[in-house]
Image (cartoon, rainbow, N blue to C red; front, side, top):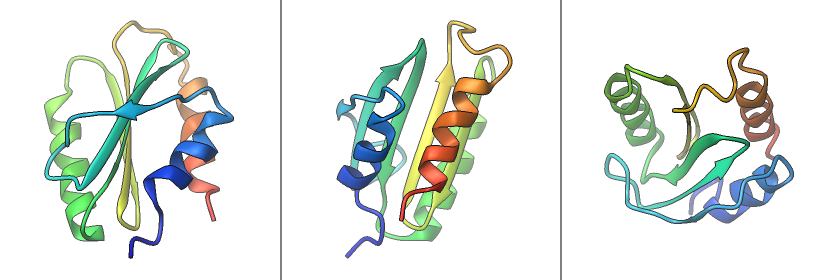
Length: 105
């Protein structure tokens, strides 16, 4: 059983405007969703292990070198936020999303 479930993460991030829909599996994930939040693209994925989530974080960070991108993990879960449109030049929206992810119990 995954300590942090996809639905739990989605619910917590909904307060910040996230409305994810099921998406392609990123970097070997078991389940993913994605959706826009205030001009940002956000992906939320759950992996078989914390190690897999950590490897996926590095893989995604390496893949997105042309835009502002932040990938963070917590236990089996990963949140990846990409700013393709330069919608958050100071990083405040991204910071708020990451804080909401970190606060999930």
